[in-house]
Each structure stands twice: as C-alpha cells, then as structure tokens.
Image (cartoon, rainbow, N blue to C red; front, side, top):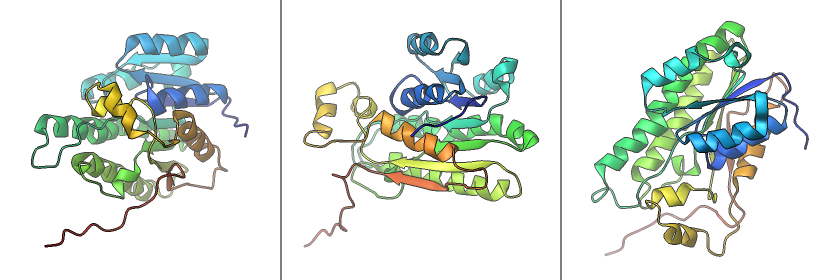
Length: 254
C-alpha cells in the first residue's frame, strides 16, 4: 500500500534501532520530513545520509528532561511544526522474577518507557494543540495486556503506555489531534539482545522456530494508522505473529 505523508513532519524517538529505525525510514519513504532522535550518533548519521535534507537528527536521551525540552524548542523552522510524534524509545531489561530482579533495571525501564515518553509528549503537545493538528503514536506492547513470568515492570510500563494514550484522548476531545497505542507481540529487533545484556546467542533462541514480526511490519502498521481519514482515530492496534497467541491461566497445584 502506498502512503502519502508529503509535507508532514514526524518526530521519532529511539530512531537508531528496531521499530524506531524502521519507522523513520518508512516515514521518509512516504514523503515526510523526519526528526530522528536517539543516543547513538553514528546510526543517526547513517539515517541522515539516506534522507538528506528531509532528516534532522538529535542525539537525545529521553530520560533527560532538560535535553528533551531544549531539543524541541530548538528545532529548525522546517521541522518545528510536528504533525506526527512516534514515542518509540523504550526497552526491556532482565527476565528475573520480581523477588530477584534488579531495582536498577526496573528504574531504567520506568524512566525510559514511562517518564521519557510523557516528557517528550508534554514538550510536543502544546504546538499540536495550538495548530489543532497532530497525531501521537505511542509504542506499547502486548505485554501491557498479557502478563508473563519475568515481565513484571516491563509489562507494567507498557500498561501505563496504553492507559496514558487513552487518557490523552480524553484530554484532547474537542481537538483534531489523534492518539494511538501500537501494541506489538514477538518481534525480532535488538529487543532481546538488550534485554539479555548483549547476549546475542540467548536472544537468538527466543525466536527459534518462529517467524516473528519485523520492524518493517510495525512501521507499516504505524503508517496505516497515521494515514487514516482525519475523522478516524485508531485508539489501539495490537499485532502478533501468527505463531503467537494467548496462554491459559496458570495454576500452581498442591
């Protein structure tokens, strides 16, 4: 399907890998100008080389409130009026049960997946409201709806993303601004490598015998949402590979 976002400006956080990188490239392919943010400058430079003058890059850690606010306030005029915000920056760390999990990892997930997401949203939203135009796309996860052992705080952060998205819709009622929570299931990006502290072999085992979602699959879903007619809001979109489904309730029997 061909998507047309010519003349639109999109901001993508975490654009240096996974869903964010795929989304930034897809948005460029649809004709948008893209503000790409992330922590790895070399990867941002590679994206800029592909997009030329339609890409503006910002080395940014969304956990740094001052840096976020300065980055949004300092955007060049051609990129300042953001039409589409893709809050993609996020991560999962560890798979230990709660009683053995690392509190440092929990705090990092909350700071990135929740605090960073709301900080960027708060910085961008006033401009959207002033122009009465915009679409906020938040990257959630099926983990926000379906618990699994070891998902503890990661799943909780993604439940936050879904509820925050719905509450944004409530606040923005009466405006033309749209909000969507995109909730992917198993997807092969750098997600598991990060979760397992760089252990590529362990990460690879997660996807053995499965054809998982790809970054391109999720980017395509995002493009579909942001190109619906202006009166249509996709509240939440959940997608999984066909080899993934819901587990039954677990019972520990005596």
